Amino acid sequence: MYKSLKSFYFSRRKNYSLSEDFIIDEFVFGDEKISFKLLTNSDDIGIEELVVLDEELHELFNGKEVEFSVQTFSNAEYPYEYFYYINYDEFVNETQRLLKNHGFSLTNNDRINFLEDYIEIFISNSIYRFKLVSNSFVNDLKDFISKKFTENVEIFMLNSLDIHEEKSAVKFEDKLENKLKEIQKENEIKVEKAKINKEVIEENKEFKIGRKISDKDPILQIIDLDQNSGFCKIQGRVYDLEIRELKSGKKLALFDIEDDTSAMNCKLFLDDKIFSMFNDKINSKSIEKGICVLATGRVEYDQYARGISMMINSMEIAPNKVYVDKAPEKRVELHLNSQMSGLDGCVDLQVLKSRLSQMGHTAIGVTDIGVVQAYPQMMDLFGKDDIKALYGLELNLLEDNPRILYNYKDGISFDTFVVFDIETTGLSHLKNNITEIGAVRVENGKIVEVFNELVNPQQEISQEITDITGITNEMVKDKPPIEEVLPKFIEFIGGLPLVAHNIEFDYGFLCENYNRVYKKEFKRKKSCTMKMYRKWYKDQYDENAPCAKLGDVVLELLGNEEYLSYLSNSHRGLNDAEFTQKVYENLI
Picture 1: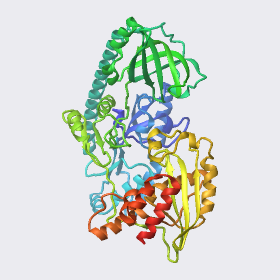
Picture 2: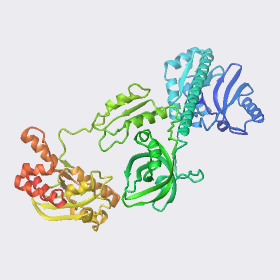
Picture 3: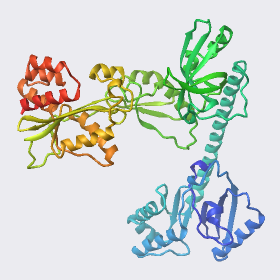
Picture 4: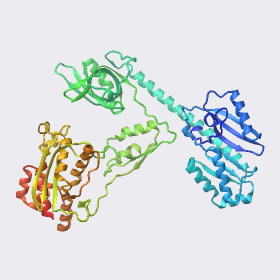
């Protein structure tokens, strides 16, 4: 019942606080008496306190007959956030003020009843009542409550006091019936979960590798472990299992364990007997279902994996973690990227469905970036279930006429400018770092000064990046970091405009690193030769350019000889900057 309860907090206090000790479920003025239904979560309310409460209420309402009942509830299960607060005095004063604006005032025959999620107002004079309904009185009062207290309350003008008795009785019966259904459903879920857990425990009783794991040792979070952690106990989900055959005849199981904080690589040596038991329980099917283990072993640095790993000596099956959402009204995720979103999504829809079912969610919105490949799987998973699929899509809007020049102001000259190119360890200016900066300063169409510096990115350069740029880890290991190189480059460019091919990429890395080093925003006038070329190509051939990579642009504008010269040292900072300058001069 209390999950949907919205009640009036009484604001008066005397020997003890009504606003802290009691919540008023219903508060109704009658002709002969005033009726209260009170709720409390206090264990200290006894006969003595109720007698004091009775005396206080009689005194508060000038000796009128007061009838009240008290019911207890658990604050742990239904915290105060379920209830709203309205100050009685402020509300009545505002009501009087609004009535006065319409030429009326409250009389002894008028009523204000505070109920679960609505307030009833009864004006005994039918002519006054009709005028108030015809004007903005109710809306003005509701605006006051919304701004001052809560938006979750309705206000009704009653034509008769008999309506409240019928309405209250119906609401109470409905409320009681709904609560009984809710309790029954929760009990069924608890019984089902207990049954499943019991079956899992019985099924996994026989699985034990190594010694029995003591309950006394604490389970550590993986994120807190390092190469000096020594012997540890962890618990989590298993994934990425690989079995290797060793020359000795034994097998080596390599797999990862992840908890809610992080993940780590684990190793376990298996003879034929243990392998048979291991393979029965931990395999591709059980991993897909999210099997969890409890493991102990020594944590140490693994030279091969280049990180910490655990050499397991004992392992047992652990209960799968059950995710619970206790919110009375479940949220609906409207912007989720699945694994079909390139470089941006990692959510497995099969796992997602299981998680949503555990938490009792009823809908999910999938909005992959630029693709709809997840739709068929969504139809298979959610089409005939209690979970509704919301089909969405995230798209990027492109300008019909792309901007070539940025941050331009009248009077700015491009007679002198800097063409630059940045090489990096990857595509993301947030996750990857700079490996090289190359630039040329141009005055009146001629290069007058060059800048070229390799940078230690302080992260590994992958083989894929080395294949593209030719920059290796060996070449940058003794070079200065960006904190030393960037100030030199900023001094080189001064306040001059910048030019680059696909400048959004290079400028993004420049801005991010400038912010890291100087803790402030970087802003310069800039121009993009890639967008200039696309505009030129569209005007020249009346169709979109098939490709606008720097090499293709050099071939199109400068010819085959220059193209071959470019290829001899492509994707190096200074080389790309010099050829970008040639392209720029050709386009303008």
